[in-house]
Amino acid sequence: MRDAGPGAGDRVGGPTEARNPRTVGIDRASTLGILELLNAEDAGVPAAVAKVLDRLAVAVDLADERVRAGGRVHYFGAGTSGRLAVLDAAELYPTFGLEPGTVVAHHAGGSQALERAVEGAEDDAALGARDAAAVTGADVAIGLTASGRTPYVGGALAAARRAGAATVLVTSNPAPPLAGDADVVIAVDTGPEAIAGSTRLKAGTAQKLVLNSFSTALMIRLGKTYSNLMVGLVPTNSKLHGRVVRLLVDATGLPPPECRHALAAAGGDARVALVTLLAGCTPDQARTALAATGGVVRDAAAAARPPRPDPSRDGTPARDDR
Image 1 (cartoon, one colour):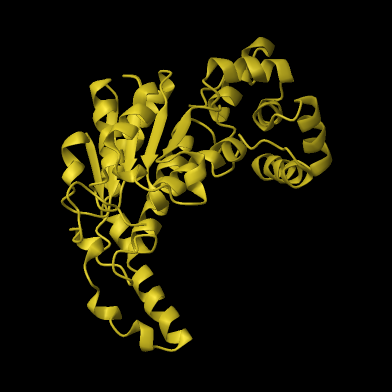
Image 2 (tube, one colour):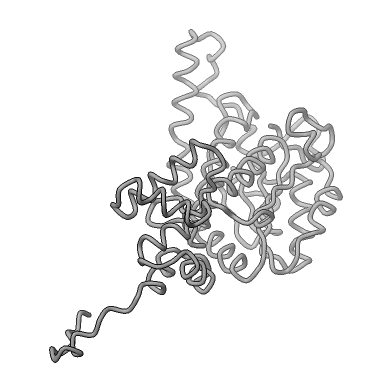
């Protein structure tokens, strides 16, 4: 992935385009030596991401607030950035049971650009603005560009901001030209690539880490997990069905046959099944509790759990268990 920009010509600025002094001899190294050089460069990416977690937390909280109010999250990217965005958005429904259309990925050049580059798409700011036409003031728009200057992303963020959306920029440039179009700038300083300008390497890895962390944290905030279990998992095949049963066993400590029965009674809905097991209620009561608590299993189980008997009825004073 090579992000172009206005007047880029033969020279594209930014740290990801600089020549890396640590890998100048990479073409003369052995195969193992090449891999060791690449691995050494990759090793610094998580530490670079760790330095921007405070900014990422702001983006997650913005998205949580807006999605809870009915808004959506839109990703915009070109090349590797766009492909990573498409991958992240596509995996949220089967993994967490996220309602389709809540997180939407827009890739410069459309679906055909996923397999083959569409020449000029990333340089088209007007295309970015057109792709952002569906963004509203209730939404969050996240632009991904290693160089921090991609015109497609700039056009999308500018249009989203005009619509009143919250805007976020994810980049590997500590001084990104598009910073003015973003309410939150997440700049992961990954430095020069092992192969100059090949931002499918460290910059792409950083974007994958940021997207994984962003969307997973958002799913947790939205109640799509119980503890560290994927309670929104949709059991669309035998492997996933087995995973859901294991999830129910891990969450409740109950035997597999009882968990399988609860899952069947819940119509395959892991959250409903888990609430019935945790609260000792019927599937209908579990569904009502989940609807009332925004789908948060822990809160729904507490709401659906039958009240404890009052010991005072047999003449024994009720005990305060607080």
